[in-house]
Length: 175
Image (cartoon, rainbow, N blue to C red; front, side, top):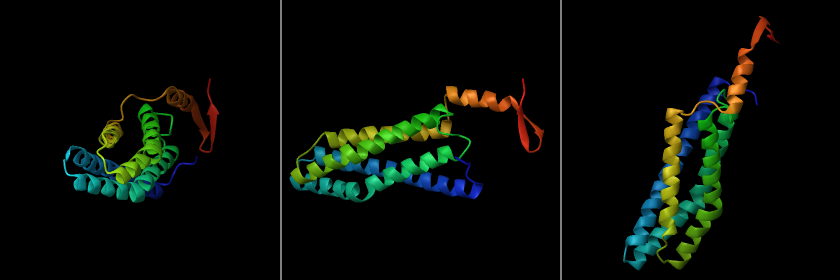
């Protein structure tokens, strides 16, 4: 993929960070509602918490998860970071893919079931706990950028360093 121009890259970065933060906030909100529903002795409060979780799940979770995944993928492919050049980008991609898939295909149906049943469900405390931890971990590696390049990234770096410009337009591989 061709590299994004600076204005497009910066705009996409703002979108990606915004929806990623929104996904973290949704996860913390779902965790709070899940804990409330699980620990309260009030059946009406349990039902209300699960109905609130259902509103988040029906209207926000899937779009936010998908926009986060897609904007991150375009950023990775459209910048020098690449998708498989650095371990932290590669790991973030797979965790985002896994959590987006779990959100759409496991968490949303579980919230739907709990909202219909109105009975405390420990899985609606566990799932947002895991997702919140995953999003905090991804935030940390986005800031710290640990672990260096992947094997592919090292190979590309070596390949790039063995090429030099012959005249300002062409590149020639040296011995």
